[in-house]
Image 1 (tube, one colour):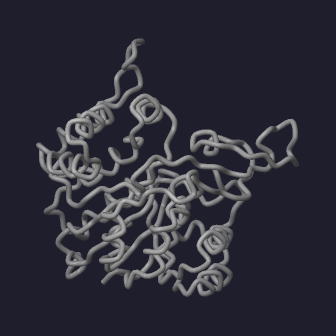
Image 2: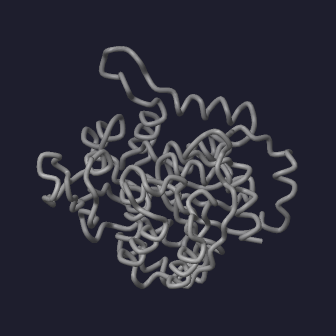
Length: 328
């Protein structure tokens, strides 16, 4: 679904929304889904991407070269690539992952390319902009902080042998894969060096969108970077929270949609929302969720955004249509 031609009726029917400056915050597959939809609305998209990944190819490169983990940044760039043979070819190059049994096994070529460009240029943002130009990206990709972060969580039942015990778990991969229930989340360092370009993008945006994505390891960390959190509070932009399609699974096992909003309020008590977007499948009680959204200052918008027959997967055209109606 990422290769939707720019000339489709969906692109042509979006009207004046294409002038809006939209900043999307998140990471991983959730952010990629949001960007795939947003690039049908506007070329003024800026992705602000989590930099706490410590697993797989990204974790290996982060540890060896002391750089930002490139994987989520690579996925965001790929999601914004131009709808041309050139753009799709380079997207596939970036996403290619090595097989085999040697040192390259599991590495994504794009991760290696991004780290190589960072070494050559000595500038993270310039390097990401260069890769964006190579892809013909419809927008810009920036890190949420200028240094890599570590996720720190208090998790109840992390050890299945002691289901009532709460322990501290460090690292995005360990937190995301824990069988327990996250009770609180934090980052180290607690006051990281900000990415000034990301702060400027949030301050100058018309809309700022959080989610979808892994709630505690991709979405909430943005609210824990003090400079970025302050920018979210003071920006004149409208703020939209796009709820996950499977609110009760993974890191938020047994959550309801209302619990996501309560978690947002606990982690960002000074941040108000304008819109909460939810698929009908996660709204068994419209009145309850609408009341929870109102406590954050937000209107609840319920619209079908899920792909038919693919649980937990957003349909880019449906999501773009829902966002168009909200933004316009």
